[in-house]
Length: 153
Image (cartoon, rainbow, N blue to C red; front, side, top):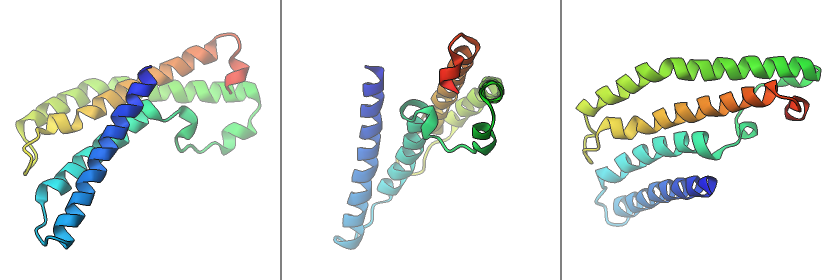
């Protein structure tokens, strides 16, 4: 249910970005009256789409990873490597969260030039991304410290 909702939000963000892009092409090359706000909307929705998709839509295996050493190792070593990676990533996200939140909140002082969207709204999706990554990695740790870990490496 939540996955379907996240997909719908991602699709709406993409549709908004694509619609603004097509409108800009039409206005620039057919009407010869370019619109500044469409470019700004495309940039905002692109930021949202990237972090939304990484946080809520892509599975762990869909992310780019360098796994030559990991796949060449025996299962117990894979478990240790996956645990170290998950702990490091979750720890980094959790440690950086307060400062990142402070900076995003600080960005409320300024807004985009044309649409006047506050920058804290523009970049708030990064906070959701950081929390989602931390939660996902904590789940990986939980999975790898329990019985049945071999099916997950």
